[in-house]
Length: 200
Image 1 (cartoon, rainbow, N blue to C red):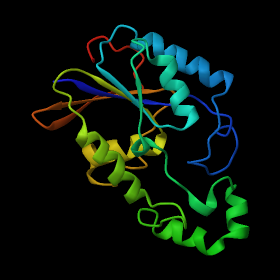
Image 2 (image 1 turned 90 degrees about the horizontal axis):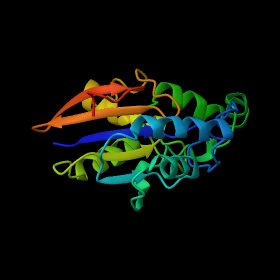
Image 3 (image 1 turned 45 degrees about the vertical axis):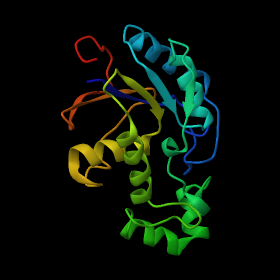
């Protein structure tokens, strides 16, 4: 049985800013490109049959860098980061000033709050878990390059129950997370892996 290899994108131009963004589409920074290159080295010894990515630039650029097999890159909407809707591109202070009611609702109901014109974390989890469930891992490993929220939704669903563990994982920029499914049972083989020997 193959493994699902999740890779978070490298640092982007907006990750350095103290703002909320998901569907805004910045490129990788020079540092982010370097992070992806290190991940490429770590993954250079593994076999994989397919590579998927969020279509957002920071993920797609990371995927292009680490795609050592030069396979066709499958860009899928299900791997996009959370859509923050009207809060996209705002600092927390700006949210408190411009959308105070939303700030309260978001804190009290963070799982189901839909960010007005965006989506809720529950909806994010539904779409990214649906993507994982659609994969055929019987013939080898699959790489998927995505985002913090997507990775944490997947990890929380399989290892903590729905969204109970959403805030309990910390994937690094260009970090590697490996999940093995044995007879349909998920096993977390590693997170933020620096050496894949014996893991993949």
